[in-house]
Image (cartoon, rainbow, N blue to C red):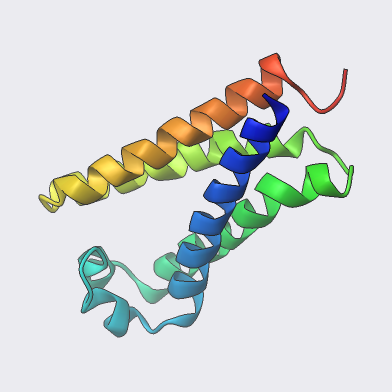
Amino acid sequence: MNTTLWIAAGLLAAVALAGGVSKTFVPKEKLAAHRGGEWTGHASTGFVKTLGVLELLAAAGLILPAALDVAPVMVPVTAVCWVLLMAGAMITHGRLGQFGLATLNAGYLAVAVFVAAGRFAVEPFTG
């Protein structure tokens, strides 16, 4: 179970890293021109960049606390935060009629719930 939880957290971290880099460093206008990024056209640049930074922090928070053995409880806490972020993403994409993307976000949400439950209750890092 430990290995499965590490893999799940690693996959979420990769998704968070990719999303965080794009939202933080790609101009909002360029994001808005791509499928799935249309919502950025209606959001402020600061909001988009803030979400990007939060996603970068999530990428770090899903891996580094456990890997460095510094406050490993932050891994499931970060997973819970990712659940909230994905709920918002599902709502946003759903309102735009992008149900495929909302479903993808639901999948990420489910993996985050798995990581949070697994690290809080099933196989926590600290006994």
